[in-house]
Image 1 (cartoon, rainbow, N blue to C red):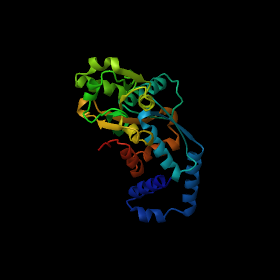
Image 2: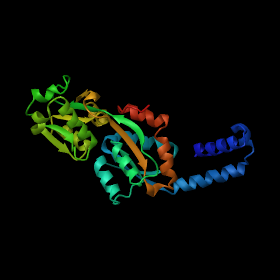
Image 3: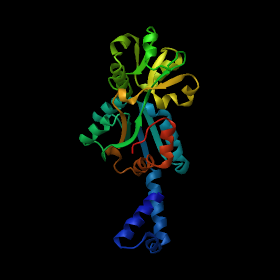
Image 4: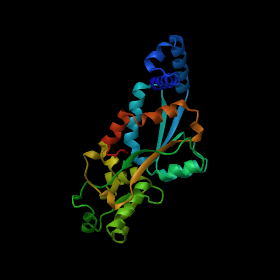
Length: 275
């Protein structure tokens, strides 16, 4: 709300070749009050449904909580799942989402090219993959797979989950795709793959760093950060979808994603930030 008013003042000041301080004095308090009440009414009366990649489960929860501290009436609902499945639902018109946060910016780019988004995709973070185990030594990296040929290895389903695709790329990079094929078990998304590891259904996981740094996994195993040169980058992007074109809350939350508070949360969960 404050950012919106400041932006209006700043633009008017430029148009009149005056600085912001001088311009702000020429606006009556009544005008400011009316504009403030109008914008608050617009935002408070709206809801935003967000489709988010499963690797964001903890980071996005924290970001939404942080936003609500200063906007307690904001109605934000987040639905987590695989980026590919959400993309298919949105493309086919069967998903009532207002915003889409993907683990692979390629998906929102395709939606933009199909004319289904308000703007081009915004790169908000770069994800990393790790080896994780609660029972085996992963300090040597992917050698743990060949040293434990009977161990089951959980990854996200590569047919629609970006983290699963990057896991397979890594296995191919190290010449392990054929040897490890019989060991692999697939989660519907990266969150389910992590759950397989926590429950003991898999002894090793190729998982999202953002999930293994979350409280429910942080003290239950060890991880090894996989060299990002072994796979294509996990460039993660978001868009506002056309149904939220006039949704003030969606636009306000989109701006918050690049705020220092949100950036600190992304970094907390191991995401690399775009320059």
